[in-house]
Image (cartoon, rainbow, N blue to C red; front, side, top):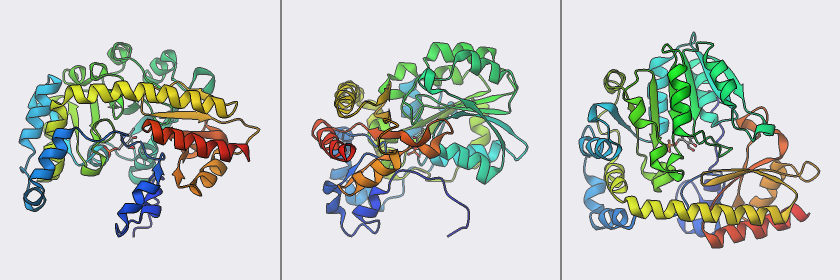
Length: 370
Ligand SMILES: Cc1ncc(COP(=O)(O)O)c(C=O)c1O
């Protein structure tokens, strides 16, 4: 193991399931509300095709350059094939692109709070000069557009916006962001991470905008909104020249065969996923109502498949709640390390199906009443 500190992520539930996979049945006893995997299964067609051909799929080398996957993404997103770079999850693409484009001299703007892997990659791995745009609780952790405009005017080399953001669930609309980017210095590359945007609607994606602008790059994970976290499939969407420059560093067979097949089919199963996103909204609202019944807490309005709860400062800290919930096999996320403004009482909870949300509420009721 390298001595480089890794970014802290959810996923502690795998300690309980067993990360040598010898006791996978235990997964049914555990609620992994600490990671933001979809609560719904991948589209039935994906399961059918993978199930029917599983033996062949596992032992067969996938198309070398993911050509069919790239063609499908381009078709469904209304962009060119030359605008798409596939990757084994967006984590793969983040590490590929940012280590190519940035150096220790690069000045980078990052939201605070935001997804922790960016801070880790920029600071600990590349060693960039990172400045944070603070999102305040009084503004429900949504960056003010005035602050964003002002910050971009400072001519950073690179700016990263997770939209919708994690752990807050806040979202800035497409048209607003396009206006902000029009005014931003063309010397600043802007990376928009749209891991959770499908939950708002794919029409909110900036993919079509990005392909016309040499300084805008969109990172599209397919993990959390298509139920595909385990097969590792994602893509970048950007101006053709940027993609061509990165493509040389992308290895052959970068996305597994199950990943390529699932990615293609997921993009075709539009109505299945639309339905799931509508259900997610309803489940999120029910979960929020249930949480508000438990304690005098504030819940940051979210558009995604998770909510950020600002627990009562007089009650137990998020760390204590996380620890206590684990005793009942419920894994949640203390978000303290994801930003400087969140404090000790910020707890992120993934939205699950109805019965699982009820179980989470029952466990939390017990823990918060202690
Ligand atoms: C905002 C954000 N970006 C990127 C990722 C990485 O996702 P993946 O590598 O599965 O595409 C995550 C995972 O939690 C995330 O929350």
